[in-house]
Image (cartoon, rainbow, N blue to C red; front, side, top):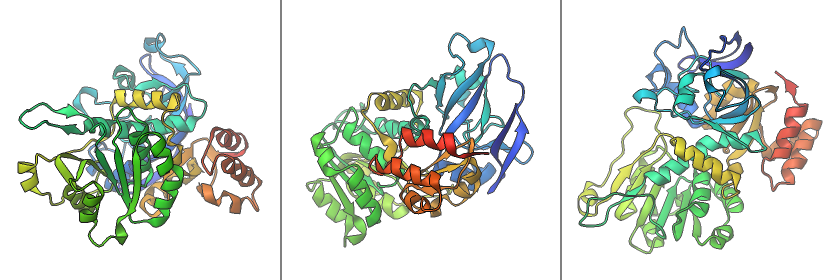
Length: 420
């Protein structure tokens, strides 16, 4: 079977190509990808090339398909897996498989599986590690958001606290504690806000910071302080760019003692330092955002590490149980991460989108792999709709859902956009 896919050949060397997939083996699965959400991690992998820990050394001759936040439909099941999976079943994938201690992952490491492809051959290790998961939702885009949501779930589980005089790590954020999410109104920050307020363990106070007033206002509209209060959480959005001494003023907002849990959502040394400075005794700093430089570092207050028992953790993706939790919470309506999506586009836009991702404002860029469609911000659909009937109808459907992407819009786009 032929597929079209975006493949990585070297640093910043992406190519949209059509090629033949190999015949599916008895321990493999043939699948159709419908949607893929572009992740900053893909930008880092593309910009670093073989310096990235998940990217193989031989991509110049054996290029890999990029994209790891994807959802699709199973077309054919190899004999080994016919008791577990069936044709026509929707799926989501946990790319961080941890297969035999390696960092190999779909979207980084494989020639014939990745999210930015029309069709893929799913290799045996995905099923063997339990990383191919059934998805029963109506809209494919929620399946694509399951992986980034699982990263947030994993981060909240990874935080830990230690009662003074003991050596037992109590995992998770402090129930009823004080939590801060710094640089927190990007797509992953918004997901963290959603999970902090609606997840199984909630803080009593949640402070979310950024220096972009427009993004702060959008966040407050999508996840409002009133909505958080209804769920038992005091939510405050703060523009630290307007504060003379952000760390000092944030500590005051915490009640003076600092924050029990702090999530740093940007790989910026100043933000890491600020996160460290607002930790309470036994506070846990989660360095969530992966840096694009192997020599990235930031100063930490080791006096507080020694005397106040502060600590730092980091996670790179969630595990399979985190993905299962994400899928379950979305399925029952506890979480709705659709606010992460600000742009939609076709497979034709992947290369420019990934290469320029840090420069493109907004949140998640959602790619539909079978169509040719420009990358369009949801709030620009109305303007484009003046000359494009397809965008006009999409704008109407988005407006009906409070400016957010939705299942009706997805169905309409897939039915009416040009095929690639």
